[in-house]
Amino acid sequence: MNRTKAQQSRSAIERLYITMRHLFMRGTYKPTGVSGESLVESLLILSPEIYGLVNDPEKVELDGLLYVMERLPRGIEECRYIHLISREGYENSGFPALVPPKRKRNCYRVDDDQMYVEMTRGKSDIYDILTHLTFLFIESEKIRRNSTDHKGKENLNWEMLHRIVDKLETDQDFDKEAACSYLSHITGRTFEETKEAVENFDAAKNCNSLFSIIHHMGRLSLEEVMHGKDRQISFSATLRERVGHHVYGELWASHIKSILEEQDLLERPIHIISANLHSVVNTIYGHQAFGLKNFEAVERLAMEISQNPKSEKAREIHAYAKQHGFLAIPDTTGTNIGVQLIDTSQMTVETLIPGVKLPEEKEKRPVLLVMDYAFGEQAYECFDELLKPFEVNGRSIPLDVVSASIMGKAGILKGGKGDIMIPSSHVFEGTADNYPLRNELKRKDFEGYGLNVFEGPMITVLGTSLQNKEVLRYFMESSWKAVGLEMEGAHYQKAIQAASKIRGSIRKSVKVLYAYYASDNPLETGSTLASGALGMDGVRPTYLITHKILERVMKV
Image 1 (cartoon, rainbow, N blue to C red):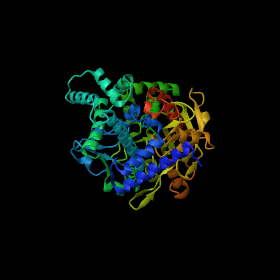
Image 2: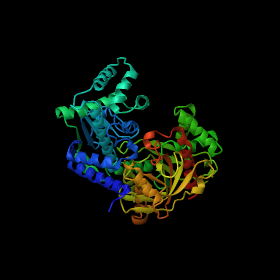
Image 3: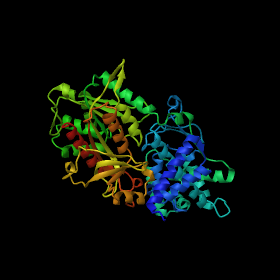
Image 4: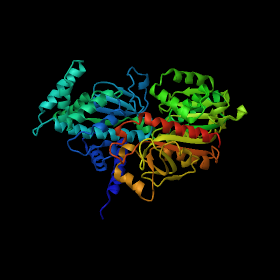
């Protein structure tokens, strides 16, 4: 019986994760070894949308390469040895921490050949980086093949690129257009595509020049083939020991609860909101500091601040907030999840946001606990620990969690970037775990604002970088009728249900509010995550969801 493409792709995802788990337990592998080749084979069968032309034997995938490099430490393409570690004391060393702009993790370049990358966000983070490294290996092999003749001798374009990179690294001038011509032959792309990619890399934060990245990727591949200098990826013993045991989630949650106790907030009603660390504070204190009367006024302010985060108004909001119940808790535990506490009892304005009154009795006013986005399985680890009672001085103090709200970015299957998705359930890909939920947010809450709104099941995927059109179409067109995909929903809901229905550590009547805005449509060519960020188009859905969450939580 012939399997469908979707079935083949789902099998490839399963093989990838089985292989990754095996390599993790083993402790080390070489990309050119048997296990490394197994990862490559499975990734090529899957051919994820985010990696575009990964299956093309000659053309280097440039958009996917930029997406990956923004999530990996600067200079990783130069390193032969990649060591994945836990938090093991390097933060107290003399090595400067390299933090990728699009994936917060501390990384340390210890010498010319070795990069150490901290993995403190759980298994999803490890799977994510291994997928990206496999993609880089595939592309580096293309670069090597395009840089040599049939006898394996380096060709003229490679020699010229080598000279260009020498000049680049010594701050000498060079002919950029000629350099793009050499590079276009090595990447197998047109001159126009190559020139555009060079500009995109130059504009990106924390990335080396595309000339340098392509050169060093090809150099490592050439040295391995010609001189036997193998590349290697390893996992430290401490990392293998800690993963799956909530080490960082427990530290993170305990730190937050200790501050709640210090501020005498531990026994107050608490609304937890998983979101970014700007929209909640700007929505609430923008209204209170400037007397904004409606959502449209809040949105205009948000647009202005998004264009200039260091503007006078942004500073005024922050200063006002600090005087009226706002407390920022930067992360020091390794989770990379910052937290904000908003004590509404310290507010002097009687409305939280336009049209939403605060309780008159200050002791009944809630505390808003805003936490930054988690990553994949990390959402379960941190939420599970946060919802447990606080153990102090022999006492067990449960948190009075009234509601849990999750706002996030997600891939949409039926609409476009900036549209909104309201989940009715979370289906965990590759497992039998399904989480129906009573969502306090409804489609009608968002109608009339000029955005498309879709309601239905959401797929919690094992990794956004492993999705392809066949698998996604299956979820959309089959009886699942999924509207989108994300990485945390099922993990959050698993923790909430365990705490409320099994452990009894929070009230059984806890309300849940989920809403996502579309960062991409992986079914549309040119609309995947690799096509770039939403930019200003993301402001309205982000602040609209924030506004509706704040509106609803004050009524539950």
